[in-house]
Structures are given as C-alpha cells and as structure tokens.
Image 1 (cartoon, rainbow, N blue to C red):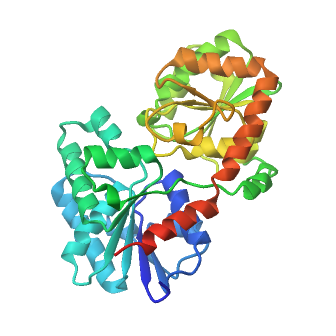
Image 2 (cartoon, rainbow, N blue to C red):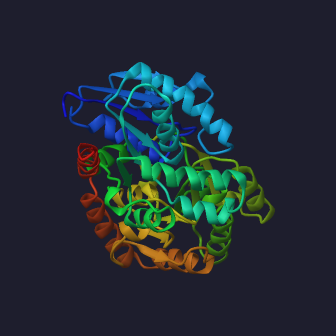
Length: 383
C-alpha cells in the first residue's frame, strides 16, 4: 500500500467527535500511503498536527457541511472534483455523510479515477425520522446516503448499530460495512487531567459535588432534558453542574435556569480544548443525547475515571457500556430516571468507585491504536 496516495475529505463547521476521529487517524496512522492529502477547512489543518503531506484548504470554496438542495450538492461535488483531479489520489476517504456523498458524486464528475471509502459517523436514519422526514433536504440526504453506500468500495461505521441501520434502512450491502469503534489514549488522558483548566469553575460551585455535561448545545443533544435533569437534581441534592460546549441552544438554557432561580447552580463554560481537568473534578458525568453514532464524550469520561450516566439511545452508549459496573444506562428522554441515577451515585461513594474503576478499565480496551488499525484494515481491503 506504500505506493498509493490517500485524500481525506472532511467538510466540517466545528470540532467534535468526528473531527477527533480524523485527527486520530492522521496523527497516528503508520505510513501506509506514499502521500496523504487533507482536504478540509483551515481550522482542522491547524488542529491536526501531523500525518498529512499536503492541505487542500476548502475554506474558500464555499462548501456546505450538510444537505440542502440537489443543485448545491452538485455544485460542491464539482468543486471537490477539481481538487481530486489536481491531487490525483488512489483512495478518497469521505468523513461523515455529506463529505462522503460529495466525494461519491465528485468521483463521477472528475477525470481522475479513485476508490471511495465512506466513513458514516452517526445514525442518519435516526436524524431523518426525527427532524427531516418528508422534507426536501431530508429526502436528498436519504437518497444520497443510499447511493453513496452503493458506490463506495467500503463503508466504515463506529458502532454495530449504525452499521445495522445502514443495511436495514439504506440498503447498503452488509459485505461493505466495517465496524471500527472510536478509541482513546488513556495515557494521554492521564497527562491532560493534570493540566490547569482553561476557565475557572465559579466560586459559587465550590464545595458542591459537580455533575459534568460535555456536549454541543444543539437540539439533537436534547437540551430540554439537560434542563429537566438539573431542575430535578437541584431540588433534591446540593450538586452543581458544569456544562462544557457551545451552540445555539446555550442562551435559552441559561435563560431557563435564571427564570427558575438556579443560575448559580450551573456554570456554562463554553467550548474548551481540554475537557479532562473538569472531568477530574466531577462526581458524575451525564450524557443526554437522543441518538449517537458512538458517544465519544462517554468514552472520555470513563477514561478520566468519572462515573457515567448515559441515555441508552441508538446506538453508541450501549456498545461502550457493556456491563452495569462500567456505567449506568437509562431510557432515552426519561429525566426522572436520569436524575435518580445521578442522585443514587452521589449518595453511594462505594458504587461510584466501582464505576470509576471499571469504566477506566473499559476505556483502556477501546484504544486509539485499535481504532486506527481497524480503519487502516478497512482501507487496505478497498478494491
């Protein structure tokens, strides 16, 4: 494979779990390719320190990050086709649904011929049925994802649930699907935990057991459930909340807590580059999402030794937490069950200690090396 070149296309608007997956691949990938091109916005190239030989900056190309109209998709594909013709890779890896669909179409429009690997990081059907079923953009996403699965030589997913969804809902041939769970560097986590936090936790939370939430504050992460959880826990216990992450729902969440007189019980610290000093101070980590491709924040918390309470949503958390001693899984959308599980852990240090130990051990099984090896194996089987 050393005589081949790879182009990684990742059209991203912000930094999250999928972007970390791309960084892990590039920074830790053995030199299996003669040349690696990162086709991505400038902010990604700045954050990914190594592993690529050339950066095809997509910042000025006006590319979207999600489906809107067929004409917009074709326009983006034509721009990416020009990049592919210029870089002439042997393999194109499209990270996320939109990038993969753009790459699939671009490879039909460009003069150069290359093989496509599509990396679908989340459950497109769960998103479609909740938010875009019957809409023009939803129908386009459904059609494009289906066609991409058929056109790709290989489809990589982070969980068995996402793979099963692709086969069942999008008719992707099962023989093409490779399940490669995300991984984490536990030794690096131990170093990052010791770093000073970027922003201080407010003094009003001093002395309180802290419950940590780390998430983009967008509607699919269920901010209403976060607020309901905070209300229930604060009504019974003395806990405070640290919320890491930003997004369009943040202002409404802060306003809701002010209206209920709970503003001093929650600190919204925005996006931080290193979440681990905050996780290390926390008594419990909470995951509230309606659906997940994997749930990288759950793995981060477990690696930091924080007891996890997570929604048993489609599909990732149940594949990370495989035993009750590794973490608590509660029904999705059930604020009462979520609050009960948090309060139970705050009241039971012995039980929390078991989850800390077993969660850290489980995180040690899901290593970055294992994840990168799995993705490299999928790329090597392209044909």
